[in-house]
Length: 267
Ligand SMILES: *[C@@H]1O[C@H](CO)[C@@H](O)[C@H](O)[C@H]1NC(C)=O
Ligand SMILES: *[C@@H]1O[C@H](CO)[C@@H](O)[C@H](O)[C@H]1NC(C)=O
Ligand SMILES: *[C@@H]1O[C@H](CO)[C@@H](O)[C@H](O)[C@H]1NC(C)=O
Image (cartoon, rainbow, N blue to C red; front, side, top):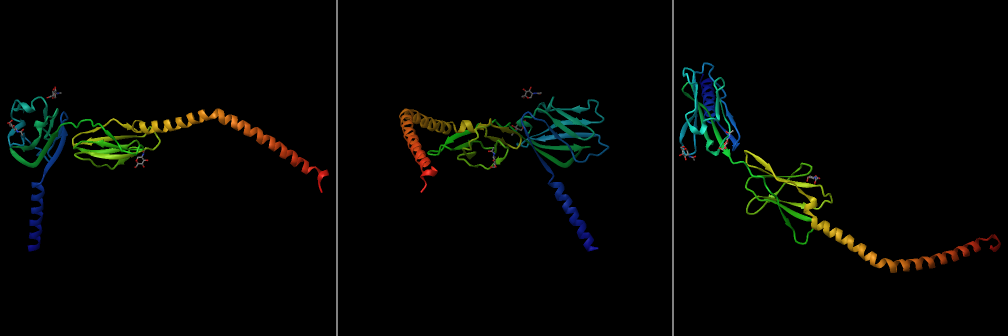
């Protein structure tokens, strides 16, 4: 019996601990909506009260419902008016058009009994659309630094959608090093994620990144053409001269070959 008793106690302790640590964390961006719902609800539910506690510990009723109340649902607090609804059957509360002030701890009383399950809502400002900064590397016209200077989580991607690993940038953010590939349509993006919302930068194309390098290549090719152009007339004359001489000598050697191959001239 003592063993069975011990097992029972263990099970009880485990149950109590899991019940106690049942705060659910929810992150949302400003302007979004959230729905919170108890895992279990008494089918004979006669009253529901959702309470909100802000970070200063100030508690207000977000929404309340009583079966015997003719008014039905009541929303006493201005902060929740017009944006909060309740499903009496499931106990689910829905708040639309969230502001940072809706962040905090939500608890639910069912039939005047506070439930174990609680919800920790964090409402964060929508993340801004990032802009990638470019930095040249002295003496390396075929390499560039791309910098995303933000505090949020940063995700770099290239045009094939592949995630690229960035390096820490001082004082904040990350950078990647991009090499000239020769494909001007390759691009790179930086995405910010604050846990509640994400935003992706405009793509940065290789053709913009290596404008100078392309310019350098075009200038070099241009130079070669200019040099050729400048030297073509004398070169042409020289070549023509050279060809003429070559032809003549070829003719001579042909004739010579021809003569040596004449059967009559064989030894
Ligand atoms: C909590 O709510 C009270 C009453 O509305 C308000 O005075 C206080 O500033 C709030 N605290 C925070 C951190 O929002
Ligand atoms: C949402 O909140 C903003 C700012 O409080 C307000 O301007 C806007 O009208 C609200 N929209 C709705 C649909 O309630
Ligand atoms: C994207 O990155 C991956 C991994 O570094 C690479 O294999 C792939 O070729 C890249 N694609 C482009 C279009 O740059």
